[in-house]
Length: 80
Image 1 (cartoon, rainbow, N blue to C red):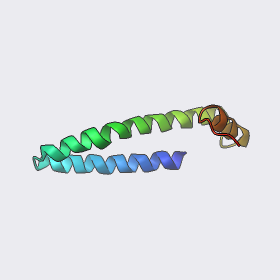
Image 2: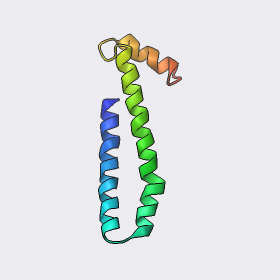
Image 3: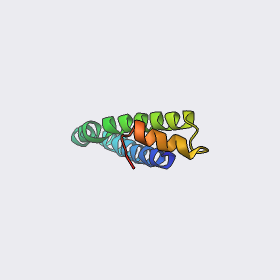
Image 4: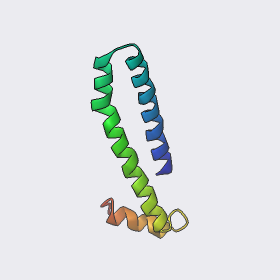
């Protein structure tokens, strides 16, 4: 889960760098496209994954495999 969060953060940073580049070159269409299609959604994903990681730590994961199993069933709705 932490690797997934790091991957999303890396993609978000790359999109922010691209946004900075297009704003410096006055390309409002690309800036708007990045903002509406990607950047807003990435922040929601990052916050959601952070919440999942916090909840997993509260359940004792990764030290306790049962915590992760319980989390999958209760929160993510996965079944065996």
